[in-house]
Amino acid sequence: MDANTLEKKFKMASKISVGIFALGLLVSSFLFFKGLSDADASQRNFCLTKECINNFLKFTELSIQSFKATISLTITAFTVLGIYFAVLNYIATAKTNAISNHLLNLNTFKDFVNDEISKRNRINKESVDIFKWYNLIFPDSKNGLLTTGNKYENLLKSIDRCILRSNQECSKSDTPSFEYKPHQIRMREALSAIGIKIELMPRNDFKESEKEIHELINTTNKEFCGENSLQRLSDPIYF
Image: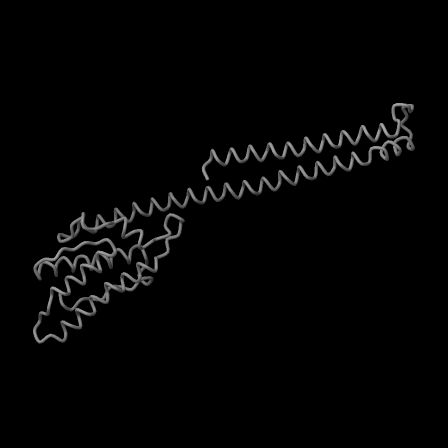
């Protein structure tokens, strides 16, 4: 809720509270004069004796009670409205702070990833969708929550399974190499899911690119998610 909307609601609620007070005052005034009229106060002589005062209070008792109720109701209304708008203001401020923290963390993440990419020769900056990657890691960032998303954890496990499968195939192979094309296809699909694109290429070129991407993912996860919060990608033995 923006400041203008909050101000409009506050003004409207204030008018309602004032209206309640005005209506109560009008009813109290009516009852006051009715009480005096019923007691023929205009026909009586003015006096300040105890008996006169008691009679006056008796004649106007209903109007006094009505006025007290009006004051009590008005104070209650303003109190409730004060609490209500304080909560609304808190929520609005919390949302604003959450968005600010989201943008700050996103920019920090973007700068960090770009800096890490610049240290590596095999990763193309355009091949990494930083916003997709960030939103997968922190799906509730806009709400101020920097908790790692379950979907991202599952996608990391999918990448790790590709590595472990290729490790197993490589260890079972009679030669130092193994069928690398299927590995490229599997790894390409798994990485694409978190926003990182890698093209099919000759074996050695793909190895070098994959190695740098592997380092980039582990380094980024460690920096933004903590060393123990996410599973580190397994070390490939086929490099």
